[in-house]
Length: 215
Image (cartoon, rainbow, N blue to C red; front, side, top):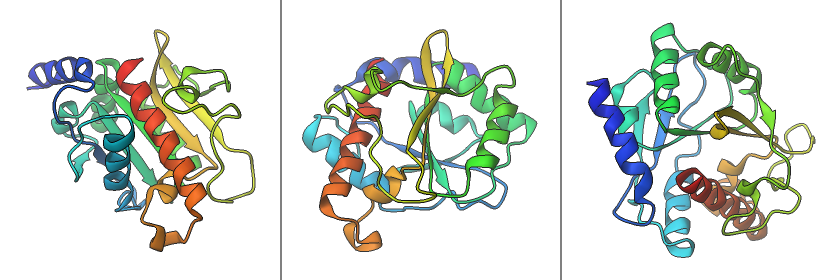
């Protein structure tokens, strides 16, 4: 089953711009609210379809971290405010997916950082987070972000960071910390963010999507 699923990852990744795809939200254990920002992914998909000519469906899939279903989606999105726990089997499943060509974007919705770091150490005990420099291609896709990630929500008032886990030079996990892009992707009525902030968040999201499919 898993070998067949791996073929879907390799088959889907080259199809940037050819055929309809679906974004996927990662469901995890531990009590953290993985279901945060329910309007974020549909809005991001619509923005990408309009401005960078993707062909995403209007809805999104929800996939559990330990399920073989994750292999059907080349791009996973993960968010939340709290605890994250991966079992040994879930960690192995996610590791296999990422090494096979999948991409995970983790977006701290404020409060998940210490738990996320522990959980990802279980997935990749021999890998450390690397902060991507502002010159990295992820900040120069459809839109140029000369100063790195935009600051969408205050959180602890720290500068936003774009952290990555790399494998053979490829970004397999991209972690946006102290920015909260997902809140910026949500409907304006949810957080009442200024339209300028929402546009910055959506543009950066489009960059992440484009980079993930073309790196």
